[in-house]
Image 1 (cartoon, helix red, strand yellow):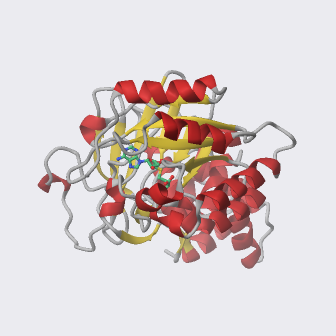
Image 2 (image 1 turned 180 degrees about the horizontal axis):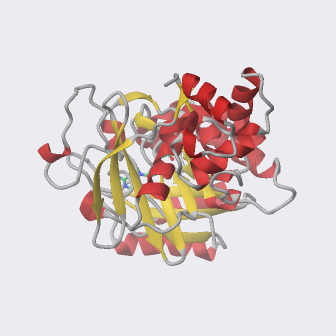
Length: 375
Ligand code: SAH
């Protein structure tokens, strides 16, 4: 068994591998559907590739998905898997059923370096970036081994981690999500969520057509510096300028696109009418929609969820200004699968056992849910 994990190669990577073996690049189109459409891991079952070539492949490569450590199902039908990586770390992946949509919320890092004040993932620290096979492996596992879950229609990169800090691996994994030879999802159904890593945002637009969600949470720098510390490096004026560049640079053949802004509702912190009006001003002229996320508490968190009254008042101000605004339902809270509750297992300690922890709630970080943008 060779060193390369074929699960982590997108079409370019697969073509490069074959060219490096002295083969034609079209071999990539023969092998990708076996792996990602049919879920086949045994090279010998791939009969459209000759026996000799299969043997050479086996000598240099293998096909190994990550491993499911635990699986829990919430009362509302949300599923959460804790997935073990080869080095003993663990991450979380969440499936959210919602009418006709089947959304998978995927992690991009073990932990997160951004330390947003209201997010449980940030409190557990950062260990490392996920590899391409670990990112796409989450979709592969759910799609090909979890028979209770229907075919995934939407993917949101809203799990643990900041996807734009793991740029190359995230882009390659998204390439596979979009590739007809692999998962064949529409770009409208794949959403990357970022706290606003500006240089990477500009780069993303040039290489991938996916939907963008921006975790905003505040409309003035003083507050956002506290809630989303990366704002100290990339402040709001620059973030909105980057968002304007993002929507104007169109790589999808002229189709209309807008940015989803996520806004966690924290009682008495960012939920006043003045703050709603300030958000309206910020969004003027920018094709956008807003997802209000009622705060999901976690042990030790200093914040409280805004009252329904404050959420409704905030939403009404945005709606009256003509901004599409959705209040996101908390999903999977009883299994620690809601936004900001994902923790995985970042600790470097080994021998992690989910049985040592009460319930299914692990450390976690991230979040969840319904694809912000797709209809
Ligand atoms: N790092 C990326 C991806 C994480 S997405 C980002 O910041 O966008 C996770 C989403 O859930 C973000 O919008 C995040 O701000 C939100 N979130 C984090 N903690 C939360 C909590 N405790 N309650 C509700 N939403 C939370």
